Length: 303
Image (cartoon, rainbow, N blue to C red; front, side):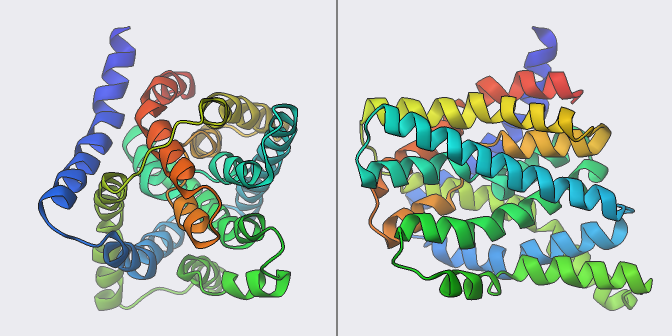
């Protein structure tokens, strides 16, 4: 028990305190989360990912493993969600809303922070790969699910190229392949901006939660929370065993797949009018309940 308390206080509590600061700031100041989100999305996150990958020594096989677990865990959870939702006879809009809340995890704001605190730089590099894949799926598969056919595959594919993190990933791969190094002024600039990413993400999480709206569809709410916080870690752990993941790759893959619902889900739900109040409620409840599942998970993974 003492170990679990220590894991929570050392690794998860700082995340909630920082997000809480953002929550209070949002209450006291009329600060638009969209502005902060754009700074994080277009500047801090790409620099963090680029920095992590050019400084890491990840082999191509390890990168492919992280891509595989991110893709497969998302698809499998989508299939499980679809079957359960059909069994519970959710209507079409609620089915789409539940899919958005279970398939896409908060791999950025929360996931990168937790991997950094609990496991360190090596695991964080693996987690950044998962984050890029997850974000790419959100902006393609997520858009298609939310629109239920209103957005063409071509539009969703084009939207993928708006992801700055994708270019950071490709750029880092090119640098590593050609064995290039950044000039010192640029290296220090990227380093400074990358260091700002995680605290800014957590403040942004608090700002976004501060604007949460609530709804009480208990069957759907319970379904989404159980799939995201309980079933997803089990699926990820099983997939990791099949792929023979170990060490930092295992820690990153399972932890990222076990995160609460992605805040971006609320943006898609609002944009396509698929139960946005419900989706926001799930984002809030999974985030608040996540320490109950993530703390023992960290103990299992050796945090």
